[in-house]
Amino acid sequence: MYSISRKGLIVSAVSLLALTGMTACAKNDSMMSSSMQAQAADSNGMVMAAADGPAADLRSALDSLLGEHVQLAADATNAALNGREGEFKAAAAALDANSVDIANAVGSVYGKDAGEAFLGLWRSHIGMVVDYTVGTASKDKKAQDKAVGELIQYTQDFGAFMNSANPNLPQEAVADLVKHHAITLKEVIDAQAAGDQERAYKALRVAYSHMASIAEALAQAIAKQFPEKFA
Image (cartoon, rainbow, N blue to C red; front, side, top):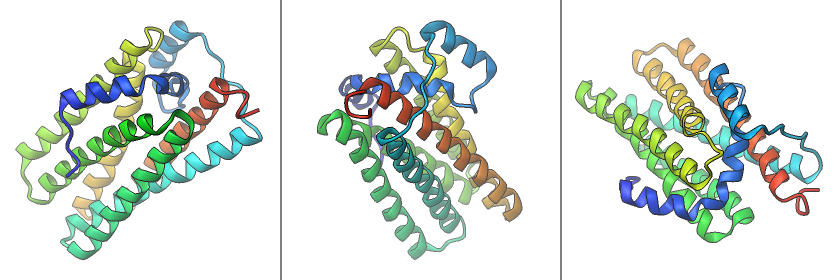
């Protein structure tokens, strides 16, 4: 349902050329390692300005959407792991609606084509998470490893796409940012599968916090890219 080919990702990345300005500033996410921060600073030398006014509104909207993404994903995986098919379908539908909202938010700034390309990329990583969850539920280690491998490759491919669009954007910094989202969500799934609710909710808080950091970085980057729109 959510799969997208490697070739499709490349085409989408070309359409997302304008998004590189957003991703460049996301390198300052507090969850990144110090080595990644140093690499990003050396490459771009950018210092993000504080977001206020319309930029603050944008940050708040992105924070809400991205936080909702993690919560709905956790709801869907928890239902799937416990065999609650009706609940899973409802959560999955809500999760996809959230994906459309995030893509529309991107499209409202960068145009319809960029929004549609972003939606394809975003859905693809959700599909990989679904594959991991199915493998976990069926205790299929091979399926789990395959999904993890695809997610790791996806982060590298995404980083390479952004770097090819903007040489000043470190591939590894971008890949690390996407990888951290995947890892934190995987931690939630693993805890849910183990029936350890305390661990699951602690992991969910970490995953949620990471998305808030991304939202702030994206909002500040967009505001800097379009100062006339986000004065």
